[in-house]
Image 1: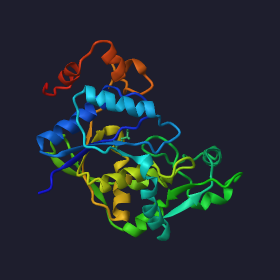
Image 2: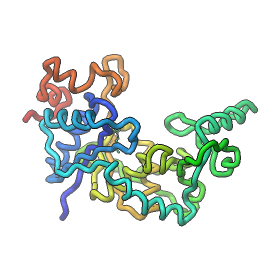
Image 3: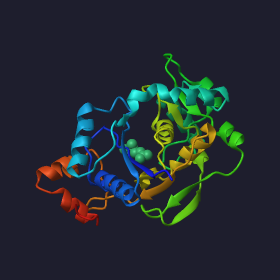
Image 4: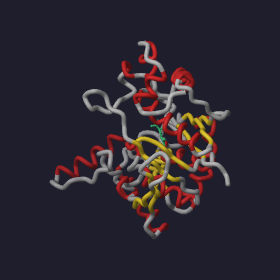
Length: 288
Ligand code: GLU
């Protein structure tokens, strides 16, 4: 039997914090316990925010935690061409379209609708649904740049059956339940951004498949997005991994940690004298 494949996939747009340490250690320890492989992937499709010094800091922090990964590390920006065939496949089937609507066009459309007294639907993150391709004529095109979006209506027709994913309640994957995917809750997600040739949602499903990832362990802030990932896997004929979305680590006031709070970064905790053993102990991992 082929061994399970786990991955930790941080974005190099800030310093890692305790929440990342928890996620990386969960993946690493689960891979070890199951005789599996552990991969590190640099998710830098957002080229406007990714920086080489943050990538180096990821390597330093993970080494400090005692985590070892297989080389070479896959860096998404080195593989932008790999996402093209998937985009072409979706486009050829009429499942995606170019959108020229700008952020301010979308805002104007949503506000005009809400001014008439009815709510505009929102996605699980609270952002307004994308208006859809039938609103394209309202674009105030001032240049030739565009985004590529998935046409959710066309995709649901194409798949034409309920889809789901397998979610484990633990990182040991002993207790698995089937969760119904609801990709319509996200409306027409972005596949290609104006400033990047692939979106996170597109790149993550392709990379997990290319790298043979069988077990995805990541934060519960991405739980709802798994619906879109499952839809893309169905449309592109990709294997589906098992998923475990873990709790998020919060600060003393109960707020989710963020990369902008520099005092909670692993680098500053390390500088203040905290050891990797302290961190492992805090999360209940075995020492050593
Ligand atoms: N790159 C994402 C992040 O840093 C993780 C995505 C994933 O694990 O699927 O939040």
